[in-house]
Image (cartoon, rainbow, N blue to C red; front, side):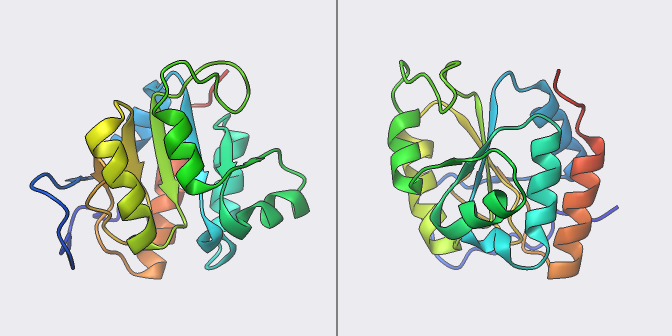
Length: 173
């Protein structure tokens, strides 16, 4: 089992509260128990075999918000994903009356994968300070403004951690 809680070194600081280091088993339980999780992916999923992992999470019943160029990978795989700008999704999620991308209501867990660290960290600063939705970063870099985050991982360890996470998530009905 990959230890995803090591090496949480920060290169910049954004306040006094940093993300809790996250293990794959805990992440899987939180995702499985969430009523309305949302996977928010960035263009980085088109690299390092991350798209396969995101597609696997879609099969498990987790809706996907594709930001940047990431929609291309889902269109090619014929998987339903909603395109939205990263800043816009954060703004939408701040509104408690927002009906969600599918019209079924707001989300209670936002899961981030495949984003540039410096970019997503700024967006997550807004979540941390103004939006009461739990955030989880499952990227290979420690994202300190999320509520929970994997530590800094090698590409190989990151892919293995994602595989462990996906294997442990209970299927949504």
